[in-house]
Length: 88
Image (cartoon, rainbow, N blue to C red; front, side, top):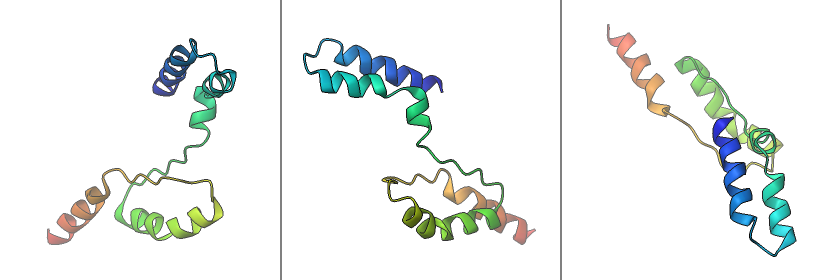
């Protein structure tokens, strides 16, 4: 929330000098709540959940056409962890 609030303040500062009312209004409308409300987060705790999540991305994106970017953080973690457990 702090990053999104900081982004909002920064955009408002950048556009405060603009004479273009439309751009200024867009920046002011980019509140932390508006930005964060458009972010979907899935917490993945094991390899099975990760595989399920990745295989369901096609369906999720087709049901949410407004999605423009998918970020997968640390995708290799559960695979490495899962394989090291099998080796033991």
